Image (cartoon, rainbow, N blue to C red; front, side):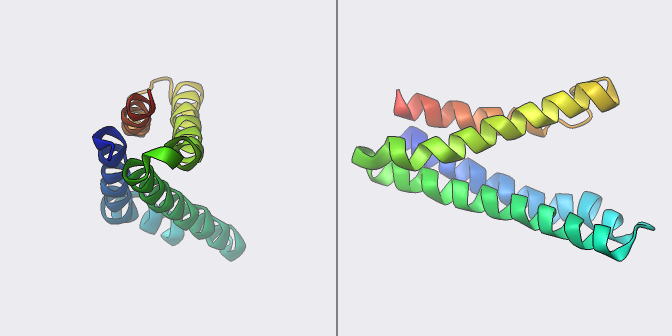
Length: 122
């Protein structure tokens, strides 16, 4: 059993809960209520819920990696790649569109989870 990978998986699931409950209230619902065309709202909802699924499945894969050390690299590689790329997107768009990395600090959580996982793989 690998405690670092288990911690990364649990952290990803906790982040997913924050995304669902806090983010849903602060981000998803207002965007769906906006004056957008219905197809755009539907695409937004698909993207929102796809992010929810990626975090949940990534968390479960990291937990599995923690429980099955012989398969850890195979199980953890994709979630880590997805989480690092998500952090990079938050950083890029924070800088490009908002002029700061602190309006969208979600990158901190994604990099933190990735660091836990990489530490567990090392």
